[in-house]
Image (cartoon, rainbow, N blue to C red; front, side, top):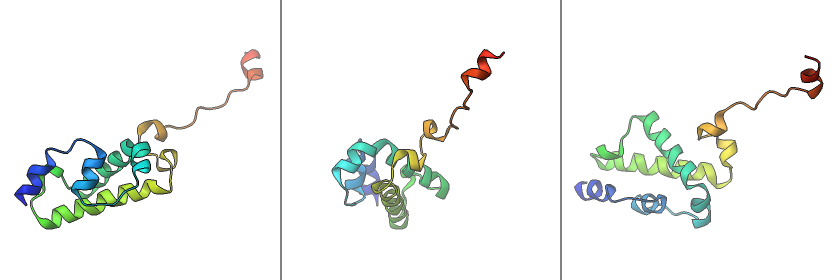
Length: 105
């Protein structure tokens, strides 16, 4: 496992993570949605109490691998707006105020 842990510190891109965890991916999906996929992966790791710097077993490695696959799969047929991973997509839509309401004040 030490070679896996060492290799983890060298990962710089979403493609690096996908390759490190030996996952197939569509380059066009990853290019467009990389930030969202990686944030979703982070959220999944946090929810499971897993940390990439603490991969201590093959079971931890496989758990992280499956969470990254799940994060990627979430975006294959879905948009960033639908997944609402980033804070900007979690905000409520502004309330509508009619112009007549403003003029009457």
